[in-house]
Figure 1 (cartoon, one colour):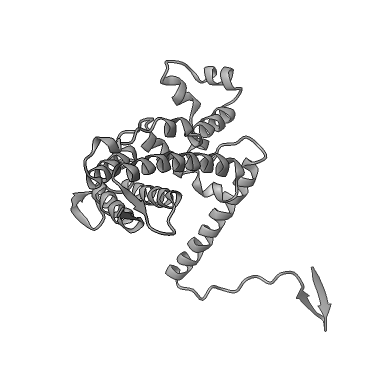
Figure 2 (spheres, helix red, strand yellow):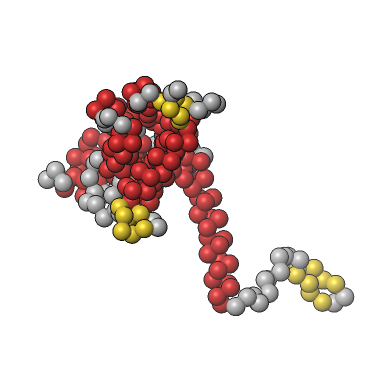
Length: 252
């Protein structure tokens, strides 16, 4: 829009932005910072859509029905016949990856009864958990560690999507219950008590947080982050022992 004032023409629309005073490098940095925010806003938008419609996000949204069907010597048509569309197939594949309760039910922890002292059992326990987790450089396979890493791709959407949050937390609660059970067995077997104010659930939550924290590093390295001469499992084993010692005490 324009208005006339004193014989001149004055623009009343938004003025054109002035020339940037930022250097090229500063401008690049400014725009990528804005890009980070826009990416998060897109995740939030997709999360809200996900809770209303059956859609896939992250790598699941790029899942190619042609490639999947070819693994069975078929064409994309078989996916369309079974699922109706590639989009539905992608969404159902994502739903399967997000529901790992069967994997949790199949966990077999080292039996405390097979060990004479608690340190040996703890070492075996954390070694088994490290092995159960993801492995950097490993071939893609449908074991729990790889599926867990695949689940990570959907985690940001869980900040806003109930469809992502609910199965993830249900699985986590199921895992905590399994941890509580084996920890109670270990406490009884080795004649150890929890310190005052500490519950077995507290210890299970601490173990779970530690294990998944180290699994994040296992996605990036096979070595101890601070000591490359040691395997990544050493980090989990040593930290786990420290957590156990801080939460327990020998019975009098």
